[in-house]
Amino acid sequence: MRTVKLLINGQLVNGHKNIDVINPATGKAFMQIPVASEAQALEAVVAAKAAFPGWAATKIEDRQAMLRKLADRLQENAEEFAKVLVLEQGKPLAEATAEVLYAETFLRYFAAFNSSMETIQDDDEMQVEVYRKPLGVVVGIAPWNLPLLIGANKLGPALVTGNTIILKPAPTTSVTSLMLGELAKNIFPAGVINIIADENDLGPILSSHPDVAKVSFTGSTVTGRKVAQTAASSLKRLTLELGGNDAGIVLDDVDVSKIAERIFAGAFMNCGQVCIALKRLYVHENQYDEMCDALANIANNTKVGDGLDNGVKIGPLQNFMQFEKAQKYLGIAARDGKVIAGGAVLDRQGYFIQPTIVRDIDDSSPLVSEEQFAPILPIIKYRDVNDVIKRANNSEYGLGGSVWSSDVIRAKEVASQISTGTVWINHHLHFGPHIPFAGAKQSGLGVEFSKEGISEFTQCSVISVAK
Ligand code: NAD
Image (cartoon, rainbow, N blue to C red; front, top):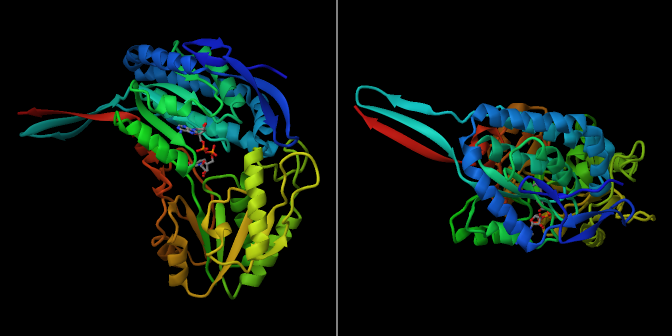
């Protein structure tokens, strides 16, 4: 197996020690990575601060070209990235390949962004111009479910707008991010991109550092609140993309056979470990039995296993802690509902559980009210649409949600009453670089992607001329 290094101030360096990286399909280490010391994390901040004036003054066309080059290198190395992503994260190869492609596509979209000046008033009275200036040093902190894509989504907007960055992936999934650092080293000036791995200890050091102007954080709501606290003392700009408990509402006019596969995909992609996965499904009583049976049938026919094996659709949970959490929810499923597919741990090494469908369960169960982040879908019966809208909204989270109907106008009427950042109609878990992505309530702060999201990496600055 290859080795990887940290990228600090344009140099690929060792850490203060090495740690094992576990392949969740075996529960055993497949390689080691270096982790940075606190001193190295501080060194990365110093490097990013020193590189900032030069990078901010670099022509936008040159910054864009470098980002495009990074996307090119990623494309050339896509096969290796996808295989390593399977080993470190667990997802099936097809999903890993898609994540690498998405990372490349998102980088290209960000590279096309141009934050040039906008004249918003020019008349006899006044000329008003709006400029978008970089903020300074950005810290990007990522979770373990989509490590490469989420890392790329922090690098791209930060760099194209003229900021420098320190990226810190999650401790269990740092390999592909460090590989991206190897590619970046030969493209960007020293200090512009720094990528370090840790043992879950360096996040607070980075997010509280007085020389950091912005933190772009993706992870759990609990950690997001801590980041907001540490960032408060110097009023850092913040983007927080946090947890979710997306509800799907199936109206009484659907053709179950047409939508069951799509619902299943929305819930079980990446082994259910997606912030915007469908995590609780409300189905009208007229179609409840049919939908439960259809989803149980798909679950029973879905191949679970090592992501590198042919035909595997669902891999393991990403890490042992999450595996234990998923088992707790399996116990809750059996206690609070009726398990009609799956329900057990796979009798093999690695962190596997069967895709699980649970019926006859209600909103009071933690399997419904909490973010389980596991391949377990509770299906809840409802009778009245207004009541189910209230129940879908009765959550501290507000990331995504979906409405399923053969009548789009009716579905839109329901969707408009769902208090989340995104509502999909007749699909779930779709996102793109041009589409704003925002969490409502405790699911986040600010926007990612699109012009709006990229602008969050800039300071709005107005020059107003009296005539
Ligand atoms: P986590 O919050 O435990 O960790 C996320 C990152 O924060 C890791 O890199 C970790 O090392 C770092 N960290 C830990 N403590 C920190 C601190 N005090 N200060 C700064 N950084 C710190 O989350 P996780 O378990 O890795 O990921 C799962 C969670 O992420 C789920 O809740 C999921 O919904 C959420 N998520 C949200 C989105 C989104 O876009 N909304 C996307 C993916 C995942």
